[in-house]
Image (tube, rainbow, N blue to C red; front, side):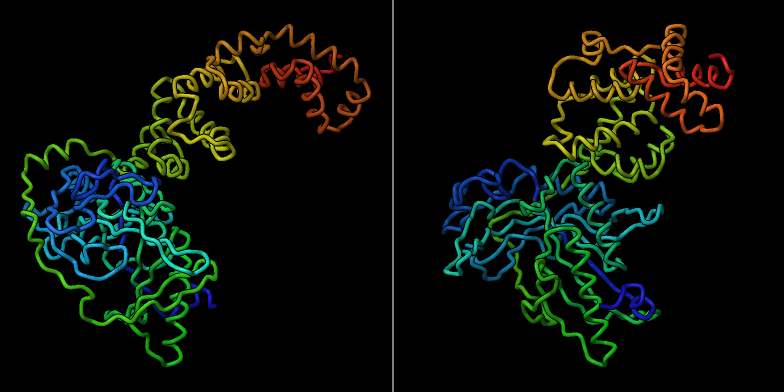
Length: 487
């Protein structure tokens, strides 16, 4: 394969993404069945979501509210009156033979998603956000002897977020998806577990010569189950299309499936210029009428978006942009950070601890930040003990580990185990002088120019004091004695 930079010398990718996000409502879109992942197959079904004759749908008010919340957060124009439509197509896990969706009157039009590329903000415009119901799930047997259908997912509320074809690289597509996931989580409207199908993406991609305006022939990529998978699939397709165009061949408009295990795309079906589906108004649902009062109520409940959070953290706390980006990437992580800062912890120290010790524990252990056993007030007490010189950083790490499996506060552990830092200068001077008297050869070598032995002395002192001495004071006294020839 050619490198992407080589291809981009001649061709410009034109990428548009269609993201489907399941809304985390308690019930399905048009019935009272539970919206629950992981339960036994076909245990959350009813005549409505199975499309049985005579069953009538009723729209889920919370799903409409969540869609409006997303649209307002992304600056969309809200349609005060919109309709549902029947999207007719056959698929084994679609029992009605149609999907209730929206067509020419979606709830949200326009808007944009703000990403950050190389430290700079860029807006990716949207075409629309519409509300619909999900299909069921086909479970193919490993021995290829048949397919089972689980209708639990059938009827789950789904928003489709359609970007304009303004994404220009696989990396930019990945950044867009990461940011969109963050926004959905900040708003609390989608769980965003890709392994559970909460968040799915299709990509439309074409190439055009650099500097040209008309779009090339596009293909659609499906079956990408991770953000990294989207990036790899787009890179593969860019290479494939560039190879065809440079050899004088034409790109065929078609839908292609990404094969993650073999890292290649395969043809799923041909695609014509005409729409794939036939739509007509849903006769069993009245039009949705949105009032300004409803919108005002939803606006009052909006939160800072990730890029806004990053910018405010730079101005309010004076932390580095890269640190702000990591913290703001998870709404629970950044909330935790802001809580301990509000409790009096220095922001710089909070950042160092959270992005060092705490993230390592979160990655290595079974914990997630939402249910982390050390709540912000407990960690704040520990970090203030470090800041006040009660314990040093190494002792604090040990206390932190004990706090993971104990309800005791940092103060209790420090007192009970006698971990308070030795900071009395005279006491430390006596300890240091005693250690130097036991190592006369090393002292002579140090004074003869082997300055690297300073670390050896520091280690001996910290071992003698069980790591509980104040490093700054130890260094000052040790330097004074060694360089002042006082032993």
